[in-house]
Amino acid sequence: MRWCRMPLEEWFNEFQFQAYNLGESSVSVFSLDEVKQICDIDFTPMCSLPLRYGHHSGAHSLRETIARDYPGLGPENILVTNGASEALFLIYLALLEAGDHVVIQHPNYPSHWSIPRALGCRITFLQADFNNNYEIDLEKASFLISKGIKILSICNPNNPTGQVFTSEQLKTLIEMAERHNFILLVDEVYRDLSFDVVLPTAACLSSQVISVGSLSKAYGLPGLRIGWIVTQNQELLKSALAIKEHITICNSSLTESLATKILEKKDLLITEVKRRVVRNYSLLQSWLASHSDILEYVEPKAGVVCLPRFKISVTIEFYRTLARKYGVFVIPGSGFEMSDEYFRVGFGGKKEELEKGLELFDTAIKEEVLYAKRRR
Image (cartoon, rainbow, N blue to C red):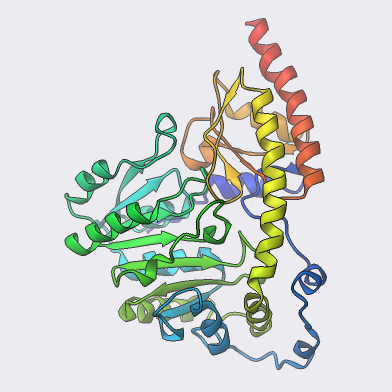
C-alpha cells in the first residue's frame, strides 16, 4: 500500500492563499455570525457544552437531524465523519482489497480513484465526454459492469462538471447494482444545490447504495469538518466505524452541536446560498460568452463548479503564470488526470472576488495566450 499526494490538493496547497480563488469547489465560507443572522440561531447555550469525547458514530441528535433527508432511514443508518473526505476513505478501506475492480465516473474528485489505487485495486474510468455534454453513456456503463466490479462510484451532482444523473438514470444504475451485486457509491455533497429539481438521496432507494454528504460544499462550512455516510448496509457501517476509531475516534463535540443547530434550519441557509450562486453563475456565463472564440463549456446543472476548455493548446505553465503573475487561481485539468486545455472554475465564492478574478483572467488570456498564439 503506497499513498501519494493528490495533484489537485498539491495545487491548492501551493496557490490558493496567494491569489483570487476561482478554483474553489464550495460556496463562500460563512462565519458563525453570518449563519446566526441568516438562520436566526442562538449559539449561546453551546458556551456551556462539555468538551468531552463525542459518540463515535456521531451525536444521536445530529444523526436524527441528518436522517430527515433520508426517508425511511434513521440514525442507525448514519455514521458522522470528519468531512466527506474521511467518509470516502472509510468506505473504500472497509470494502476493498488489492485486486478488486472499481469503476469510477470521470472526471470526479480524485479521492475516488487515488484511495482504491493505493489499495492496489484495478480501476476503470467511466468517462464523461465534453462532446456529449459530460453525460455518462449508461450502455457503456452496463458493458463495464458486466465484467464484474466491487464498487461503481459516481458524484451526483458532479465535481468538476456540474452534471447530474436524473432520477431515471439513477434508478437504472441501482438496478444494475442489485442485479450484479456491487455497491453503488454516490457522492452527494452538492445535492442541495441542484438548479431545477430536487435530487433523491440515493441511499434510501436500495441496500446496495451508499450516500455521502457534507456541510463543506453546499453549506459553506468546511471548517466544521462534518460529513456523513448513509446506508442500509449495517456491516459496512460497523467496518467503517472500526477504521474511524483507529484514526479520529470521533468528531468534535462542539462542531457536532453547531452542525445540529444549523441543519435544523438548513432551508434558510440553502435559500441564501442559492441566491448568491445564481447571481455569480450569471457573471461567469457572461465572461465565458465573451471568450467564445477561445473557450467552450458545458453548462452545469447543479453545484458551484464548471469545467470549460480552451480551443487551443494550453499547458500547466499557463496556470502557474496565471496564479503567480496575475494572482488568479483555477484548477488545471491535470488535477483531475485530464489534459490542461480543461480547467475547473468555481462560482460559489464572493461576488467581488469572482469579478476581480475574471477581470485579471481576461488580462492573462490576452497577454499569455492570444499574444503567444500570434507570435507563433
